Length: 438
Ligand SMILES: [Zn+2]
Ligand SMILES: [Zn+2]
Ligand SMILES: [Zn+2]
Image 1 (cartoon, rainbow, N blue to C red):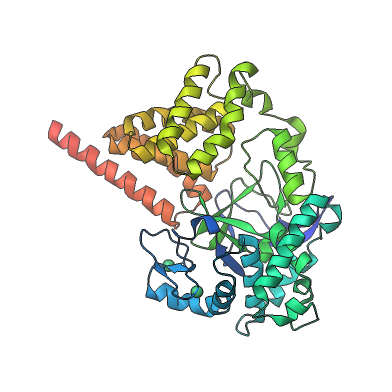
Image 2: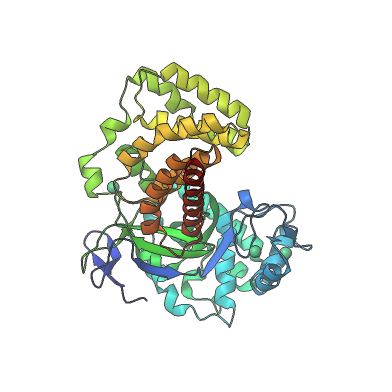
């Protein structure tokens, strides 16, 4: 483990990680490749299953017809990991197992492969408290279903697991049910530069990180590599925390999600003072309730890429709420963001810019610490301004984005390099303009 962090027993939370010395804001605390990972089923046609890059055209594995790669090089490099999985996938065609089943299987393949010595890394998964006892019956049933899927999936390749007899596998992997429970509790969502989910991965040493609704660290990904960075200065022996969930939500909703997904009650400072709850539901409830109730429908339209209908629904909701619900209202913000997405996909740039600009002061208010979501939103707005030739405004927005991105992503991340290039382009264009004006 890197010298900047060490495991310790966190009061009331079990195992945790803490700083071994002072850590500066923006410092890279830890970076890790996953022990096992897989591309999310919902983007499996758009993302390379080896390097996790989004590509317009991908080569398809001729045998399982599921795995896709940017090129021959990625396909070759992936083969040692994919070859066992490929047989399993083929045996289930046309069904494709869920992400957690495929991830659990990949963990087993990694552990069985002689080239990887991961027993040291795996200790965190083994020792991670099992939450099986405090799970609801419904959740347990869901997991048992996944466990039997896993057994079915692996039958051809890992008969030891299918027969439930002790095997060469580490104890943590011998019981399919507890394996699935551990995988679903310990995996991290891998996201791309736009913060869209592209896969799931297991990074055992970091699964000791505890949650806080206002964390002192954030995780970003470069391909499949996870980078943990400090977003505030951290004192020696201070606990390192991340947020397991979207922090921009009401205390009640965060707590419910943490209980349902991670089986604990959050006692963080932010949950105690419920700081922004009032602001998030500002305005008359009768006016914002329709927006709250439409959010799942809007998500569906987005998932279907039904942009025209999405935009019309958003516009309808926003015009009904316009003057009586302030921009700070969380549901109004969500609807505005959905409308922004739709406009960008439809190429309505002016309209998109107007919507994006409205969200910025709200993001600033709700993200007191540097946060990737805030940085990426600024970049989107900056790109719209740049495209519409509002060059000096774009330069200013990019500068604000950089203040955040340099902390959350660091100067070597590809997103930061993209941003620096945009800033350079703006500078050159401004110089050219003033040259022509003189
Ligand atoms: Zn690739
Ligand atoms: Zn295949
Ligand atoms: Zn909390």
